[in-house]
Figure 1: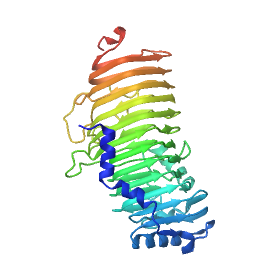
Figure 2: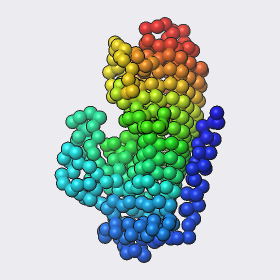
Figure 3: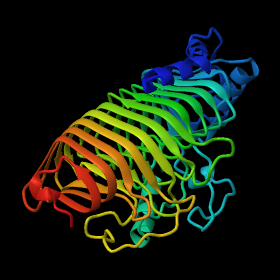
Length: 439
């Protein structure tokens, strides 16, 4: 079997990603100012932008150019074989009127309200969004009500538009741009094949509810590299759909995250929706600073599926809370809430199965506990290797519960108080002798 990285690059090349790069150099340029855009930050430029996009699409492809200026807009829809170029000093700014994003205008807070993303596209291939410019979702007009709703119902995500949502596409590339202040998730490629996100900055305030950075959903062959993500929720959340996808054993396959920096946010997550199955994630050479969670896999009965062949390496974390969390009791996975007296239940299509996970060359400083490796009584976490892992924690150690085949190789956990390791109903090798006694 080829190494994951080689496989990923081979798949991207075979699927036509090279054509997507060439598309960025197209001689067909459609400047939105030629279609009437003002770029004054006051006049809506939606019609001019969409006319330029449609002209590009109707001509067979090319580059839609936004030169320096602030372009106020309602939702727009991309076309195939196009490069959406935001030059230095260009800002595409979302409307602050919630009605502009509603599929059916009305009370945007009403139950069942549905929204259109700021930038969307479906069944379009060979699309690049690039440049030194900015896409700003003007999310402040949405976040207040979202936080109120989350406070009333823990874990609830108030419906809102995403910033960039592209569905069932091949050969997507985001390069160099800034994505700011999304009402909800910033970039959501859904059921896409061949996605590259490089040198992208994604930012939203730490308290902005559900403002995930990048959320690949049921995607294959994804590369995320050299990005800075500083958000109010998951920096990256890799998902595998809520149901099985016909004809695909794994909804999500071959994901690589490398050389990224994560600041505020909830870390690099898998889940919670993984019923469709996921395999083949490599995370390497990344830095976490001030994130709530570092690396984690989160799911629970009913949302689970197979998550396998996961590799984390050469990672540094500072001021995280905690360093790692592999939990099948989401959202009851804190040490205070874990049901240590849980009994095995029947396996279903929604049972979380975490297996074949490697964590290597990781150094972390946690302001909370070191972390969790927690399976279910009927579905233990299995075949997990921690090698050259060193965690400094202030509030507690590493809890391993309902796990089999966990190997610790040169692993240290230093805690300000409490035990460095707590092992419950698990098979672990490499523990210090004092921690090796079963509990």
